[in-house]
Image 1 (cartoon, rainbow, N blue to C red):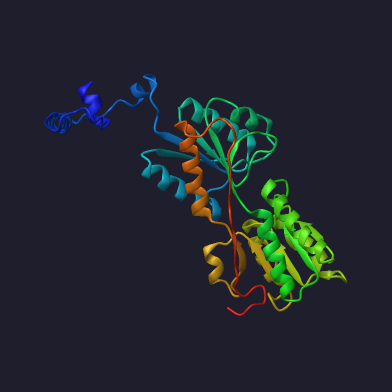
Image 2 (cartoon, one colour; image 1 turned 60 degrees about the vertical axis):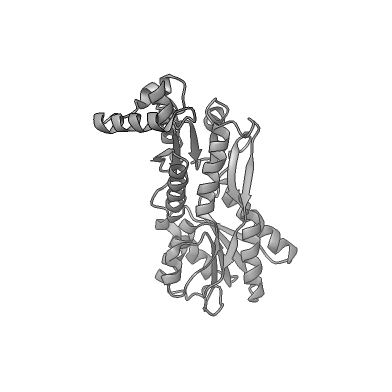
Length: 315
């Protein structure tokens, strides 16, 4: 009991006793048995994090922030990538629950999964990042998607653009749908035409955008709904020899570091990825330790528009 109290910084251990215990620990190379702690009903001091794609710059920043915040709190973060596959994601959640971890941070592959709703209703705390589950009372940390899209479209209208097309990928995800709604709200209020183009994959993007730009009503501006879509659009416009911002102005949602290195540099709505990661860890740990009740908590962080050259502004 004295050894246990010493290791866990219990206040009822005399300084001299604690020194003797630590000396014995160093001499024997003793390490606490993690499995035994869990069997004794103590926390595992580990959390899980599942993201769709670690190669995505946004999710890699979120993951780094999660690991740092968890480490500062004395927790280990187990990291997994679902590759956007709901079945793989469910298996990863099951493995983490059985490992076990004390809670899970999740960027869902689908925001409408019934299996995820069931998992979220289970005994282990789950906090979603960026993509809240629809129809489920879950804890979430997200950003002002609708307001960010309105900010971007209003900036384009400030340049005199009147034919602004919204280009999207993964339009089934709730954040993307919120951004589309913000785009439509803005143009509806301005009594300007609305047009949405869905890119299914990069291989067919040129065919889809060629139809758009070959039409008699070609756009004078594009608003892309996430960084995967923006990267696809940039590659395609270059292949089509369409000049940005000379032929068409361009603004995206998601700001990535390398956008400053491109010519022209890209204007984008910036999501606070580091704050998203850290806030999600803090919320999850509050759920784990019982600071917050079982009812769902929704945290919404603000976004900012980072103005560069692709919209028509000077650098």
